Length: 277
Image 1 (cartoon, rainbow, N blue to C red):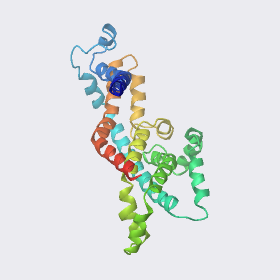
Image 2 (spheres, rainbow, N blue to C red):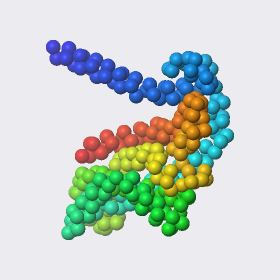
Image 3 (cartoon, rainbow, N blue to C red):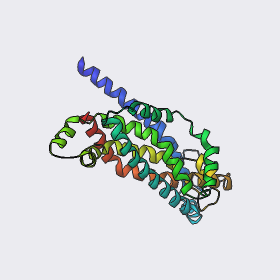
Image 4 (cartoon, helix red, strand yellow):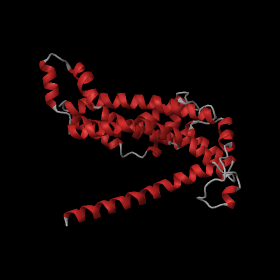
């Protein structure tokens, strides 16, 4: 009986996993398959029909446009913002999780409260501040908001992660003569890599797909990011669905490649963190 229950349970899990794969994979298949079709092929054939041939002209036209400028801008903004977020969150989470002082809970409460602030409420103040700082219509105008609005949740998650690190490790380091700085850089920071990897992927995806601040704080093509390229191509080729799908495919490709490359390290890091906890 026990074996039958286990078998039935595995079958149910497999069916549900297959169903979820179909639900999640169908839009992705539609996007990629449509990108390789000619303009009117998608209207004459079925929506999910396999392309009659690999029509690369859509991708060629996208690449020959200003797409590469948007790509470089997004890469630069996300990379710089991500480094600032991870370094600041690491330095802030350490005292919150390991030190006891009077303002610990009030300050950490402010960090948690900042997570509840809707970011779009700040669009006008941030826009005015950007103009006063003469950063409007530059890629540097996006780095500040991206860093600030992703920092509270990063500090919150990393503080919770660091709190699970055994204090005996710090005590052993102190006995060996390590100060707070050496303990932080040689023990706490390396053990926090799983949390940092999770935050890196989470924040990178959010910033890569961010649209509102990029639209408000930039104006010219030299400063705009990939989400705005999708918006502009949609306006330019609103009747050419394969062209729009080609843009979407190229915009999603960097994140897919990054996740595929870092997936193994992320899973190993999360498993290490689970065993540690």
